Image (cartoon, rainbow, N blue to C red; front, side, top):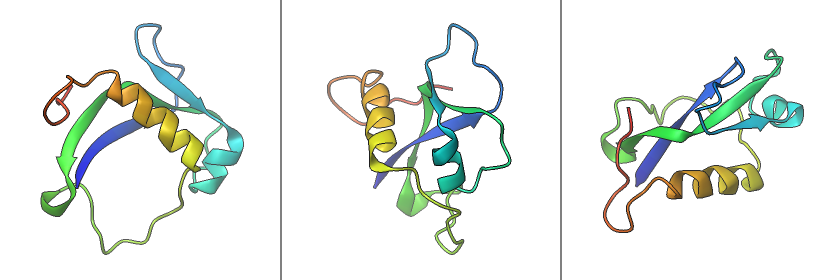
Length: 92
């Protein structure tokens, strides 16, 4: 499974960054209720393969999940960065 790992930040993103503000209810849904405000940066991501990942531990319980609509919005933002063919490119 190919993954695009997105960053969640807690400071207002710079005007040059493409980011989506996460609503309070979504923060609570994923266990980030202690954050006052946060954004998901969709203008850059790290590419990973789940089966070989050093970043994802399948033995750890998830804190929560964002609703499907937010996943779809993030996916659409990342798709705008990808070339039309081949795997996602890594932007770091």
